[in-house]
Image (cartoon, rainbow, N blue to C red):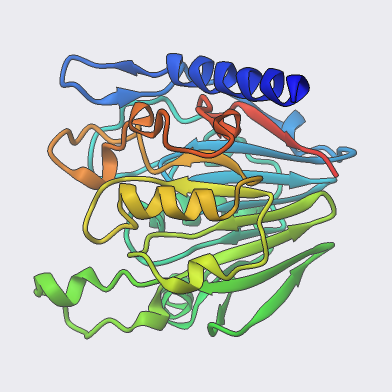
Length: 288
């Protein structure tokens, strides 16, 4: 009992320490710690899996030398950013793959993907986003919701998403389908990573193989999972490390999808020491 109390106290202290790293700008937006730039050294083989937040919903994964990016937004966005990106596409030496969850330009950054093309072997996404990539002459592969594929020694499966906001707002040339959006379960030698993409809450989110890491979108927006449902998902997987995502990046104080506040998680997450407020570019090590 004493050991358990000590452990819980330690976890609470770690959570409070992480949340203490959150600052606020003059517009009241929560912002992350200062960017930790990285270069080609981060792409070398390692004895574990290293994850780095790229800003917004973007992440870089180096799993024992297999390198991929998920939804990288590194150049050319159409709104000002609150952060310095930790690496530019021209500084990336090589990628085994880029995974794109959907076509919104804060996830499918065309300028970023085009500038990464000389060093990226393949791009993976849904069939719809694959059609956009094909038009850009990127080496891409499209997938359905039940697909599983390999990137060297990593296995990737698609997870469902519900983010067809375009049909509600109108002004688009097509009717968007649920299968145009996805998340990814990324199984490495050191553990299972879930990148959910953008989605309203789905019951399927509570029936996944238990992830070791979640790229945790907790923005309280009607076309995202929403704060309450994000907490529900986090507590359904009480041992998953939560790498905070989709926050502190875009200078848009009136847009909920970009303005999650880590302090709103305080006291609401089981095992709070697993909340990680990463600086852009900061290394998080996933060990087997």
